[in-house]
Image (cartoon, rainbow, N blue to C red; front, side, top):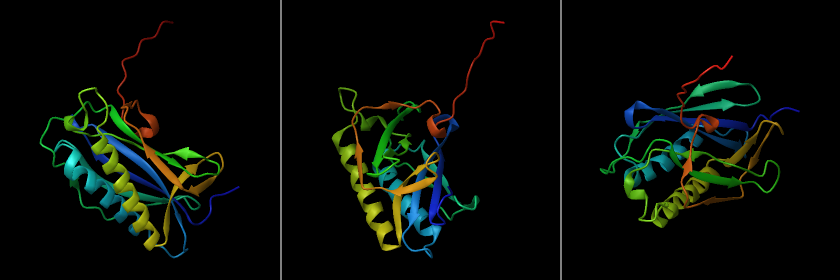
Amino acid sequence: MAYSTDDFLFTVRGTLASGEIFANNWAGVRTDGGAAAQDFGDALHDFYDTLAAVWMPNDTTITSCASKHLSSGITTELSWATITGANTQEPLPNQLGIRVSLFSGTGPTSGGPFLPGWAKQTTDTGGLVTTDVQDDIIAALEAMVTTLGTVDWALGIQSPTAVAVRAVTSARVGRRWDVIRKRANDVSESYVTTDFT
């Protein structure tokens, strides 16, 4: 099996407090073979820009996006204006992220990135993600999916085992923080090791 010529992976990169680097992977499927990868990148930019303007501290910057054509393996850096968080509160620890769970209805059935880089204002007194943040992520996701539909793209889920990208049919965002330890390279990890031999 091989990926379709319409299957793409998009990697959004940025930096957090203390210069730590993160990367989020998103997948897309062209619904018209002539659709431009830059259009998907522009929709991703709007998604991050919407959230950064309210909920991300100025320690968080989202700096670039690259597309990978999965059937050919060709990677292209897309045009991307750096986004800087506008929230003036202190940042949460870098390893705390919000999972965007995406579902396709067919295999692979679920996936989605862990979004790091949030301000303390995103947490309520019980330590959960606030419902306002939850609602804003879903609203930004809905807007992105709508925009993608107008430029002949669909948000997708990549499955290396199935060698396919499936169009997303639904999404959800919970209120519990995820602790990210280099899952899909969302946040880098630095280890201290010992050898007992």
